[in-house]
Image 1: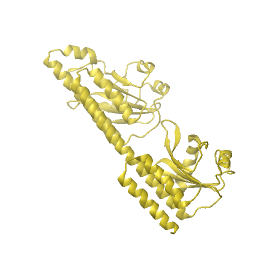
Image 2: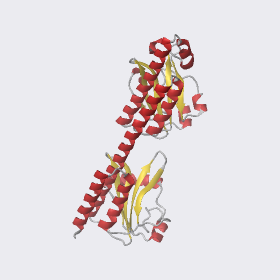
Image 3: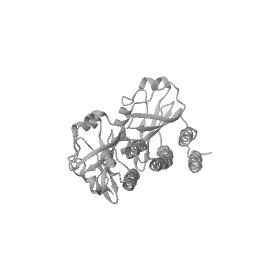
Image 4: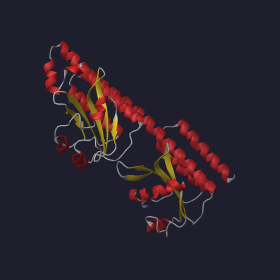
Length: 348
């Protein structure tokens, strides 16, 4: 059987697995095993980056000992620009190349050459796929292309698993929130549940919900998750000076909270470890009554589906407030709602 036949069979095998299973880890393990079977070599490993946690994790590997230590995230980040520009990295003699980390460890492991290609999702770098050989060798253009194709399949597996998990998580959040709305008229409890659920689902540092007090033109805190008491007690939040665009009815992303002109309390946000903020409006009968905000500890881009999810959840929060208000109106008890959550007639 020719090398090209091996490549074809490996690609077909992994392609079929992508169409029949949603278990990401099994597919990624199948990919690294396919690398060795088709290309030969000592070992193969697929890594994924998690910048939120500051880690570079081997998620599937074969042929490496338990004692082998991989390069850290800081070193990987330095290599990314060249990797993306060239499309691959080839360390012909890894044990002596000054650019390579952990050379003694590689020598002890019996690693000679290393070929690295990027793993991407929709053009975004998320990790690497590496082949290790026991003897010093060069790699042909065909071999580099084959490893790149397998890395692309790894990216597909990661993205598919992410989308499925996101769908499950979104469904769970909506069900939990709906159950909370149906079983309770305690707005603070409902909004507290909302803030914690959405921050966990999107994978951010924290979340807060503030409702508009039109008399003082400030945003009053009614729920938060992941924020320190020091930050929460920093002072009144102005409706005009604190990401005011969100109060006009559209989601706003602040990429750097410590420098953006539209952000209030910049120093306090920096001290709290807040970098990027997503702020979406909370509406009741088409009127903006507050904002739901997500706080990321690292600079990040919120995807369109993430913004849509947060916006939909904010809408549910507004609906819960509206329902509670209508119920209390029937009981002629509007004063209680006003005292508890800074309500205003315009909300209803």
